[in-house]
Length: 268
Length: 305
Image 1 (cartoon, rainbow over the protein chains, first blue to last red):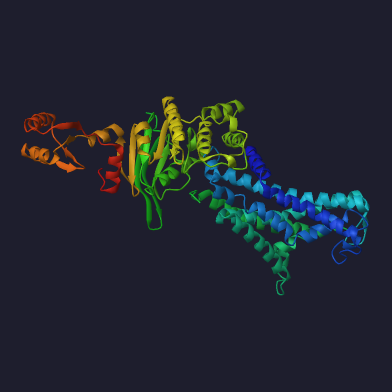
Image 2 (tube, chains in turn yellow, brown):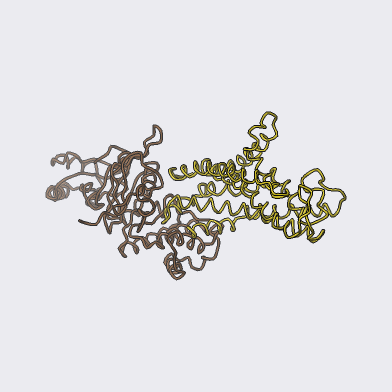
């Protein structure tokens, strides 16, 4: 299994689209910091926005907020939507399915590779944003969402935890992308479909009348990291994100797995 | 108990809605065979091969490779089996060597020396570091053979291995298949290059509209359609009349030649009679059917078996 996973990652590393997404995730915070250096004012109306020039720790949270709307879903969809469909399209699926590995192993390795990519992209953004902003504004104490001050090192731990919990709903988007990639066998359809689905999930959250289901919508889970930045930590949104996202991850993967297991691999 | 055949298919059916792509196909490939699987385009060859390799599910029937069913035993059923369907496909953004390394790893790991060996066999070692995206069709076909050989197969399934190759490439591929067969590898190859099948194969199956219309030894097939003679003469019409007068009823004129069926003794008698009648003979030769003639006859007309 480790070998199959390793090769899935190596295949991603050999493709341009991987670097397109990864590059975007790293360039956006650099542009964000550059613009703030060149201009006065800032995003005061979003969480931690008003503290952005007090410490480099605030910037990754602010960029996280902005990128969660469509940038991260797009970056994830680019890879997850392509990971099975491109193999169907290129005919390499039949090449690997006639070796000594069962279909389940291949599919599991693709899931892990897509999740790895998603996590790497999120942490790459966080790291670049933190380093660039800290160079400009310093590695200082962070003001939490409750208005209390936390030490810089504690703030760094909170940033790592926030990126980790943020990667979980992103994994749900990756799972949906993988599902579409398997079912449609069409890379473009899977990428666009995944992005549309992610935007729909967020749109549902702002529509009037959806208040009762809002805590269980995927879009809401992108804000779960706010729980870490309260004093004391608010575990309710974090725990909810863990199990709600598990459902959003599990359902499409289960269907995708069954389709992958039974489908005919013919000329595409 | 005897060893199971390398390949056995019984009652294989594949339907796509109302279309029956493969219709109750039975096949047996024995050890040491170079088995030709022939049929016109769309006859069901590739669909059959896909079912044999477990890439698609039969609607009915089953296939066994060395006694194991790919749908029941999964990847284990492919132990000792290698090949490609509809041409080998590789990752264009990886080098030839990296592709082989990947496939070797999927088989549980492979030594670099073994990769070098198979690259040498297909004469691709000097291009192994180049991306497959830049390979010619022939090079990809050869890389496909190399990828198959990595598995040390006892059974090799090749779907139209020479399609798209230039004459030199076809010759080299035929040479490679012969060499592998001489090393004891059982080979099943689908093709519609009939001269190639005639040169390489000892047994054949012919499929038409999803149904097997012949399966057996190639030499027996050719013999079954043999017999008959071709007479070339400056006076074909007179010669035909003479043959008919000597009781050879089926004598026909075709393209300026007289074609007929007769026992050797009758042919001897007729040749003397032709001479006595002053009809010069430029050639009187036994007519041997080619696989192409047989194939076209069988696939364009009714089934013979």
